[in-house]
Structures are given as structure tokens and as C-alpha cells.
Image: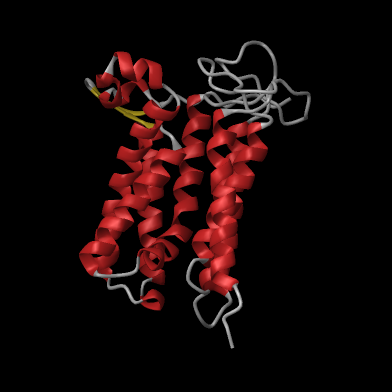
Length: 263
């Protein structure tokens, strides 16, 4: 067992103003993603100004979509009784799937504004997304939330809100798979070793396929939200249910990218 490194969730206190690590991690992730997009911009035909605009719209999509997605996907009964819940960001709660939809609609707006193909925009911006996922999961770990099931693996930890039992640090599993692994795969697939861009749909398809697989896998050792629990069979979670369409969409996108063209 490893001791959980109890870190104060509040990074900086300035009188009544408190800056939390979780919020800082979002800012750091978006900042690194913006820098990486700038590096890849010329290969995809984007100007620096267009990258700045796209990252800004995507960041708004992540924040607004993530919060709205959480209230609708994970807290719908409470939201229906108290619609103001969506604005109570200080109570916590963000959804990746909602944030992903937010980025999609941000890309849709940017495509309309710049007269570009939506999939080309998504293929360009998506390889930068795993860094934000990595930072967000580190923020979850610092908060001591979204921990895993009890376990006797050598790296299990006792989380402050998880009772006396040592548990899987599922936040770190997701940080590694959804963040590190997904970033390395997408970066080398789209930029690192190829002389030309992958075909349209390929990067987006690979992202949603791998994220769906990683998320479903980690959910088997992660404790579901207490107010939702398991949806069926004693193991199916809301996160798995929301990730299944991503796997299907990823396979469809990869098929469209690599289908044989008629001679």
C-alpha cells in the first residue's frame, strides 16, 4: 500500500478568493494544448490566429459542455428540481462526455465561421485533447475523488473520503491511459513520423475509439457515483454506457478513413 499524498485542494488563498488545483489543472491543460496546436498548425493549414480562436472556442465548449453534461448525464433528477444547479460550479462536477460534445459544437461553429470542413478541424484539434484529460485526472486525484474499488495491489491507497480500505487510484489509471498513452499514440500518428497527414476521419476515429475502450476498462475498477450506482448486471456504469457509442463512432470513422476507394 502507498500513502495517499494529502495535498490541499486549494492551491492559493488570497483573502476570500481561493484558487483550487482542479481549476488550475484545467488552465494548464488548455495552455499546453494551445501550444501543441500552434506547433502542428502549419501542417494542417491553420494560421496562428485561427489556432487561438479555435482553442478559445474549444475551451468554452469543454467548460460549458462539461458542466451541462454532468448535470444532465449524472444529476438529472436534481437538475430538474433545481435548474440553477448547472451554474453552481463551486459544488463540483464535470463530465468528459459533455465536454466532448462541447468541443464538437465549438468545432461546428468554427467550421461555419471559417468555411472549413468540420472533420478536418476535429482531426487537427483532437490530438491536443489528451493533455487536458491528463491534467483533469490529476486534479481529480488531488481532490481525492473518483477513486477506485478496494484492492490489495501494492500501489493501492487509502483515500480520505473512501473509508479505511486501500483502493485502486483509478484517477491515475485514467491519467495514464486517457492522457499519456492517448497523447503519444495520436501525436505520432498525426505528426511524429508521417510525411503526410492521415486521411480525413482517422485521427478523430482513433481518439474516440481508444478513449471509449480505456474509459470502459477503468470503470471496472472505479467506484461509480454514489447517487447513481450500477445501472445493470452489478457492473455496468453510466461512464461505460456513455463510452460505448464512442467505440462505435470510432470504428465508423476509421472505416470511412481507410475504406477502399473505387478504381
